[in-house]
Length: 116
Image (cartoon, rainbow, N blue to C red; front, side, top):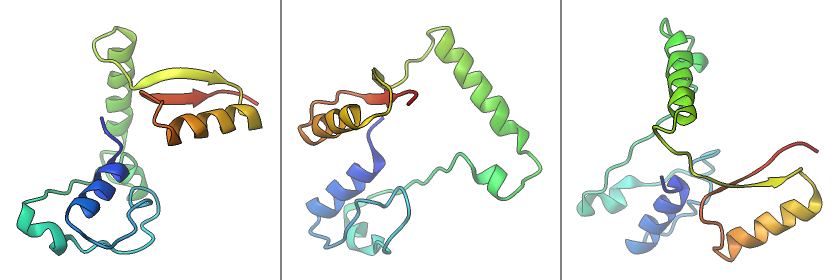
């Protein structure tokens, strides 16, 4: 799955929209006027995996069930994650190296750092 923030940024670039979309998926720093791309039949779809817990819905436990099933499917090789590489502990050297690979577009999938 592609990075949704990058897709929105590309979309804004393609259609000449002057909007800073770099953080759309994170903190919504500025509104993005979707009417600017309406004539191109662009669809937007937001999915927040924490909606049930944020709003304390009656079916909150369903999220647990979904994540449990997903982890089982990964464990049994039925689906693959986008994990490409575990870089080791979180430290300045690994952070700097990961950042460089991302900017140089040499990161084929998700990179993970574990521990300190």
